[in-house]
Image (cartoon, rainbow, N blue to C red; front, side, top):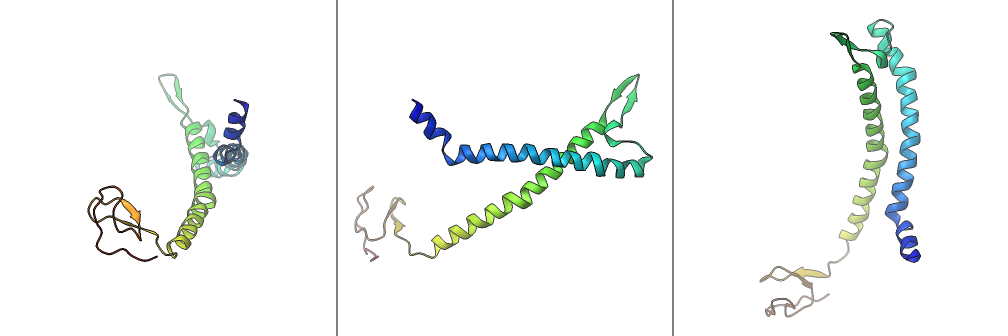
Length: 139
């Protein structure tokens, strides 16, 4: 049981996820500092020396803290944008490049024209529907 647990923990996805969570938490604190230290004062200049996080709407002695929600939304959008442009797009590009190099190699399989299952390119008979294939392609 311990060996299975060790195998699970050391799988690439689990390690990548753990690293991502730690980096994400650290990065979120940086973005929170950016929003609180730079963006909030800029909004305060525009709207008259108020902190965005303290903005509220009072109706019948009930405070609706929309500034806190806007603060969190700005933080989320910054984190999402940075992760998209600095992590997701480069990984997608690398994946596309690696798949592109595989596409340049000669194909080793084809589809059976009768049952459309994938069979070896050199097969003269389909292993699934047993249809005789007219021309076996050489590899």
